[in-house]
Each structure stands twice: as C-alpha cells, then as structure tokens.
Length: 142
Image (cartoon, rainbow, N blue to C red; front, side):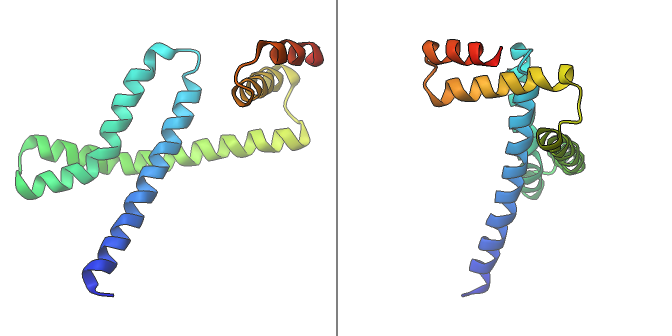
C-alpha cells in the first residue's frame, strides 16, 4: 500500500471520528431542546458551522488567507476544546442516568418523568404511534 493511500485512510478515520462526535453532541442537543423546538434551527446551523469550521478553515487558509478564513479556522480550533468538554459532560450525565436505572438512587420526582417520557416515546416510535398501545401503556403505568 503506498503512502498516499495510507494517508487517505488515516485522514478518513480522523474525519469519521470528528463527525461522529459532533453527531453525538448534536443528537443530545436536540434531546435537550425538546421543550423549546423553536431553537432547533439555530442548533442545526451552529453545529453545522462548528463541525465544518476547522477542516474548511484549514483548506481556505491554503488557497485564500483572509480574516474570514482565519476566523473560520480559529472557530473550529476552539470548537475542538468545546467538543472535549461537551462529550465529557454528556457522557458523565449518561453514566449518571444509566447508573440510576440500575440502582435507583435519584428521587422519583427527578427520574420518573424522564423515564416515562423516554419509554413512551420509544414505544410509540417502534410501534408506529398506535394510539391503542399508548392508551394501554398509560393505564399500565398508573
């Protein structure tokens, strides 16, 4: 395998990890904004810009060095630190919720509403939103 092919494979793996981490942050952001759907277009735009900022900024600086390309590059560079902290915070919250599902240490007022909504949403999604099932599910829960 020649040197260029190895570089392309390495570059593809790095970009793949970069996009997967940003997708994870985006999906959790969408879940977090469930109560305010009017903010979702802003989240999409900001996440799209930040995800593409570093690779696009590096490319733009090679062909056209300007304050705009420098701003895009630096935005992406700072987003790498933001990605690290967002992933650490989100993963810590996930571990906290998963351990609560096993050991039930959070008060019911904090955890029951989230659990009910999550199971209700997953069941409706898997069964195509059948109203008969959701009514049965609500009666079984009480």
